[in-house]
Image (cartoon, rainbow, N blue to C red; front, top):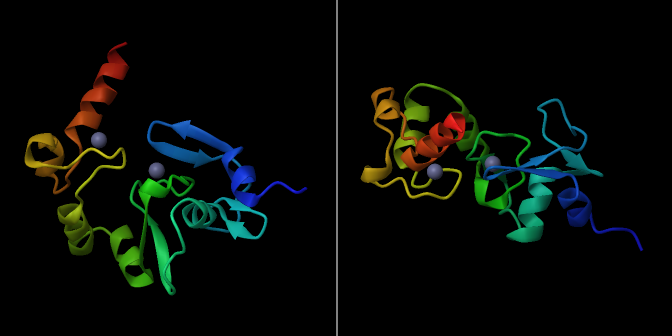
Amino acid sequence: MPQPPIERLLSQVRYDGGCWTFTGPARNQYGYGGVGKRLAHRLSYEALVGPVPAGLDLDHLCRNRRCVNPLHLEPVTRKENLRRGESGEAGAEFQRRKTHCPHGHSLAPGNLDAWSLKVGKRNCLTCRRARHTARRR
Ligand SMILES: [Zn+2]
Ligand SMILES: [Zn+2]
């Protein structure tokens, strides 16, 4: 019996902190991974969460195009997806609306990295401290 695509997908994943980085072949010129004819991140979302609403794209909240962790994927309109990728006002608005970091920590006021706030971003302080500790070891 052929292996279901989601199992083939998960057998080619490297767990990178919170990201599930797909290590299989690239499917298109944008660098997204693929399993058979399917885009890896889309397949993962549909198998583990549910169907992506018609007409919507999956946006990578973690900005890692090879990531197939469904918690890092959010269905958005193509327009919104493109907007988020841009810098400037649209990017700033996305930063303001973020509620959780890609590792699932709440971006409440006490958990915001002060340095990132200065440059208009809202990055997770817990993650920054964890990276800092990892470097010192
Ligand atoms: Zn990710
Ligand atoms: Zn975090």
